[in-house]
Length: 232
Length: 394
Image (cartoon, rainbow over all chains, first blue to last red; front, side, top):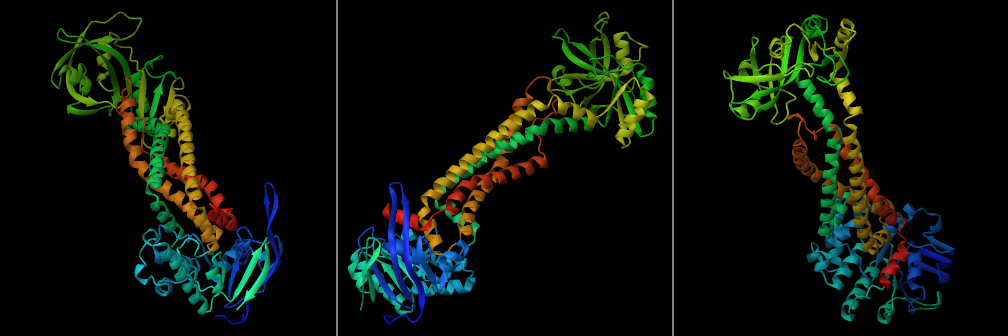
């Protein structure tokens, strides 16, 4: 879904993030203003250490800006308690990580069920939704497999299914193809395209130009700032 | 998946670590259980032994242990008078003496002798043969019967050692009426018992009518019976079984209680450190996963609960295992300690008590909570973004 955003999900207004380091404060993100709308597909690119992941973490409400305002659904995230932020992430935001972070002691299905159980979904609903999602990512036949029995691409598919478990409005992916070979990376990129096509807003942080070029908006970052933005 | 189920899966994921934790807790738990049994074991065992005699009050002429102080004079009359008191079911006077059992050319056997007056009960239980019915008859314990091959109907030559100040009396021949069991007999200790006249005759002290103690059985109200006994003979000391136990608890048994307290503290500390280290290492190995779960929306309470449940499972499983282990260890240690000479054969150092079990559960539960505090703190304060960033960088 590459059309203009129909409604705003997250809005960063002049956000900065400064870290206190032994050698002195380091500003990872400087005065960034950004809006992500429903169904949007955006990619954030830039050299290592430019603040891409930090910005993504703030958009995903796992980190807080040290300056500026971050609004999620119009609500100032800084006013939310830790529990409220957890609930927000659980129901509205999905995360896909470079290293998958699947729980090795759980099967693929159990990994996907976990956020649903946390959200209080009924067992039958969880089972149905998990089956749908694993079918969607092409792993319907491998639901009982543990992560150690899956390839890297398959693990990332399960991670995507897990991120979609509670039907989030915003999916954030941090280098989702970073640990995969080119061919597998393309399969994951195609899968993410399908997720976005189904209406989920998608923000990807990536070094991969090919993956970034699939997005409608590409934000180029440098030294903590959005240096330029392109759309197609 | 509930926190407990999640914790179980986390433990099973690293079976060696889980086994190490569970076995460690089982080992220290077993030791802790034994220390708790030991702390009150002797007191419980002594109380049980005293109660098994069927007499709940001891009347003596002195506060010293029976046989180590002046005797009760007018023993038979006093026993009869005590037996006639309200709240008293029966009373018997007992005189104790050492004796030497002469063999047929063999080595003499040192035994204890009890002479009893009053009744109708006796502080022994006849196992074979019959009870004594007249002066000159005795019952012997298995110690004498086994070592000398004697039984009901046999005769034995007896040389009592009565009073230090009197001359050694001549040997007497006594008839064995039966073989009996005595509550306080030690392993391999020889004991013979008969009527008070028998010991008086043997010692040549006929007419003195002295006893080392008078055992009184109350009808139920021990304190009232003891008060009546004290009122009857104000010059004597009437002590209930509970008071005897209390005195022992304040003096003789404190030693075991102190050892038990110190060793219990050491074992608990060891368990605490073991579980804390294991959980901390485990949590530190999974920081990325935990941060990812938090990013996916699992609450702080949920991930903290997972860690707590892991601690509870390790301690719970180890604690369950510690009970049979502790019982086996207690039986073994009890056997070693009971081999000390002079202890009553029925006396035990380790006695099962429900209170000890409850305390064991409470201490282990506290350990589970305390051991989980530090790893729970790590998880609760985990900076999600920073951890995810570090995981990628590393």
